[in-house]
Image 1: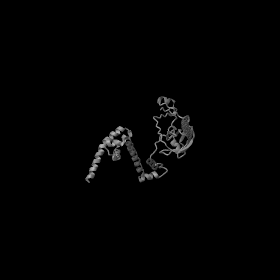
Image 2: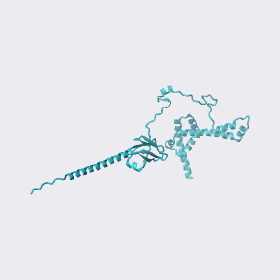
Image 3: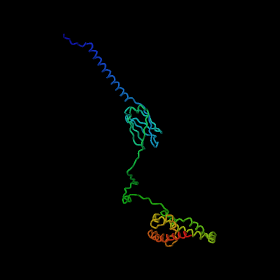
Image 4: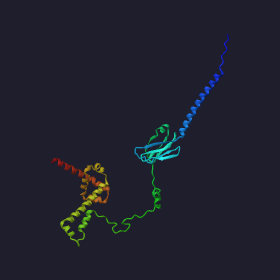
Length: 286
């Protein structure tokens, strides 16, 4: 007995085709819905609030620019700002004292509604600075021929009678006041009798000698006294006074010959160190 193959019902085949088309329609609907949602998210702008901050705290008037929409704003004194943005916009934050910073607006930033942006200080280092005032070239021979030099105004250029008079020290002024105008006042005579005139003369002489010593002290650094002459640091002033009482030293200082002065002090240092050693020995014996 032969069995005839069963044939599919036409109505059943049509139902299968319709079901497949429905599934395709649903998939296409969801794809279209997703694309519309993404496009809508890109097109809809939102107001983003944020704050910039730094270690120094100087964040006022920082520029916040939306490069995509070409809209910008600046921060307030506390660094807060508000600017319209949308997804994938580029924000650039800049200030003179900080490094330029760039931020891409993401979904997370849009959802947070507020963002904190740290700023890093920008250190401006110049390799070389060349200052050429008065259009100087640096060539002295060339500059001297073009540079107009104004005359220096001093007492000597003005021809004043006291141009070359050396100012007197306090002790010299006191001595002058004590001895001047002997015809109109009895003060010079009184100062001579009481010995004040001699006292003031000795003070002037002592000050001049002390000035010489101070000048010599400035000629050489203290390390030379301690290393070359072996004078202790706390004895340098005493050693200079030891030299000061010698008339030869005073004459040498007036010549301003530093080499001759140094050679004199080298010889004097041997005598001074022997004097100190002898004085210490006497103290120890007592």
